[in-house]
Image (cartoon, rainbow, N blue to C red):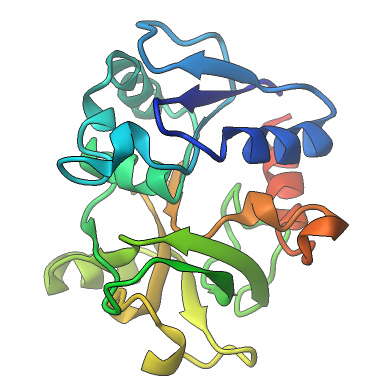
Length: 229
């Protein structure tokens, strides 16, 4: 398996996901600068977290128009898995790979903490090492993580099994108390129609080493590598 991580000016989690993938696959991912016009041959494309272009204009909007994104969208259309984490979720949503938008947190504050997530669909390349309904703990670090879509889109996501994770309490309870950024229906991550593209706000790559305080992200990357090898 060969993975490629796209780096933008303002990315700051590319090394985190590099390390998580390196540990999982035993092979160093490639890093691709956003100004490149071609992608190397790869089995997985990752758009990492950070603050691309300083989050000016609208989070992810400028990065979504970088030259490499034409190739990312073309690769996704051919079925190459694309993973967007935090700012990466914002970027691939702005690029049209996923529906909806990421708005400012309802608290109007930056959130940097560990949260609980409930796995909603375990029948995908990203979640195969989890059980549906399983609760995991991973960090978030965002100001604009409030997922929004109209009711028709939300109903379609629900009906097609395209909700990947929801914010929840430690026992899996879904309520406003544990949905601090205000995301519609407590959604923390969604898939595209074929479930090959995943966007999520939390950072599973930062729950893959004992020093990070949680290993709940290890099955995420282990299952992904297993599926793509």
